[in-house]
Length: 631
Image (cartoon, rainbow, N blue to C red; front, side, top):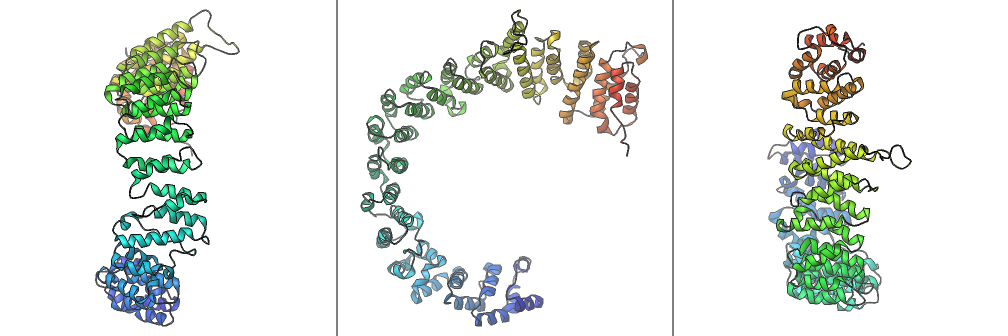
């Protein structure tokens, strides 16, 4: 402790945070006594930073130190502004004496209200002291060009007496009229005036200064009666003040009786002169507030509306007004309207639509897919993935796009992604349709007029099949074994040798750990006497095992690996035909499990057997594995 005191004497400051954090309760007095001589010496030189440091470090534990607060009180009356500001903060901290000390400050020097600690307490907590502060506004310099710190929170303003609110409003008006002040600060004063109960903004609503007029319009939405301000704000829907007035009207409309809103907003929608953005804002307000009769007003506005306004109407009706029969009539027209309007329909999520309307809304999306613009059809197809559970036609529509080779744009890819997502989410919603698409693509690949290495197309059906299998295996790879068994149904449609790689990809992704020996034996019979297919299958098997390590243990794979290396009838590997299939599959198992086990004896025996396999490809692959690195 004495070391801290000597350090303080030498440097004039000290970091007490670590010391105080571990200080036992009641020991703060000893700390202060050690530092007291340095604090007193500094105070005689009008230096109070050490006292502030101690007060900040001790916090509530220092509220009972009378000598410290005596020094802080001395600092409150300092001629140095920053010193007095900090002193007010720490001297007014103790709750027990705060009211008395605050009154002492106001009575002795009301100009100290220019400091935030005093201003905050007077305006938000001890409002009985507010009158002398507002009366001396010219002296506290909070309402002149050198300081614009006049803001008071709404919750505090509502606790003031009417005379205090009126005086505060007068001060804001004076600040707004002060031409010497920067116009941004004057506008801030006008906007703050709108939050003062009973304040009038008429003077500034007709101002020639754009910034003040816009600030007054913004302030109307925060006045005591925003509902009465709505007609005034809407009257600017067609002029240059619309960008501010309409934004403020969005808040004011929430205080208007809902039954009155259609009458107030209809002139903006169907009248002349209103800006497009103003009309769109009026559309959104009618929907968001679910005003009675909103559907009729929007239906009336639909036909003559600008395309952007019609898009806003479609969006609003699809989001808020589906309970209104008039909304469905408009939405059916929106399907065949401009591209922007139709795309809006695709943005609605299934979970945002009430359950009773989901099947009907999915019909709208299916109708959008009949349009000719790829930029409209694509989003509609992608959106259908959410709706297949409520409309059985969604999966069929996607399947038809996938198998239609006359489609040259990217929308077949969107349909494929949507159908795969449907099957991955719930196979019963789209598996039959997916299988139909696969069968048709297989037949198209065998067509005699198939585009083959032409400048603009090359085996389109095969490319679509490849994309479908890749996405399907990716989506289902981490699903349960029961779900992955659906991949076998797809694989059953791809038994032609030309699709062998796709077949292997589906079969290996669908492997069940508890039936691995039987399934690998069946796989081996498929790739027998086909070294390229065997290498491909082995690589697929290794990657499948490496990405699903948590689902198996090396001990579970060992019997399968032994059965692939040693024939089931007990003959040695030398007596078997030199086919690489079984050896390469065994190599995949060793490659996945061997390093994980640390190569115990049983795995090293299998590796040696593979290195002596009659098939050169197996021997070569076995030599790529090492049981110990060479340093």
